[in-house]
Image (cartoon, rainbow, N blue to C red; front, side, top):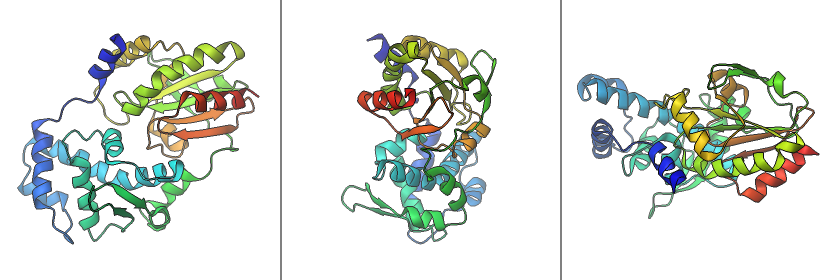
Length: 291
């Protein structure tokens, strides 16, 4: 019960009035074949700092969504649901993901890389190759979805919650998991107790977990104290540190959370997962990492 209350408390907050106002305006004014010009909205429609901050966040999310959808599809084998998109981009207004997708479909500047179910609005297919061919997304996406298994794990340097330096050198010769997540991410919250179980079961055999939190990179308002309290309630006793933009880029511009890299004693990635995975899958990956 305590864990459930904590998870609820750390979930993304309800939509602000500004976010609701911006989304409802967009919902009412998106026209097929007409691009949404953010600078015009910024100058003529949304004139308060709160509205402009929401507009800027949605604009950033808009251009990250194709990469997310392509990475998710390539890794999972099917498109993400509207709910999963909302969870990843912290869309709190009902139907917000649909509004962003409608803008994407109506904007002639965007490649036509998705099809949607006319009845439900869910994404039916994602054309990963078309996104790869687009100059804005191609190079980043190619690095993101290129097979990771068998490759040497990228080097990284960051800091822990208590501001101590942490580098990949400290993991040399140790089988480990590099886990990317952010606070309030629903699939991350489902994964959290499984990581605690992995740690308890395999730490004695030398397995290590490094959890890299993306809150700062995603500009979330949680504090180190919030993150430490969450980790304590989950029973985490492994290494907790921050995902920096440099670490994010080194690992293929991680855009799906959680993302997991299992690395063997030689420093090679042996398993790579995105999104929630069942305990049995994580246990099998850990055993392979320990071989």
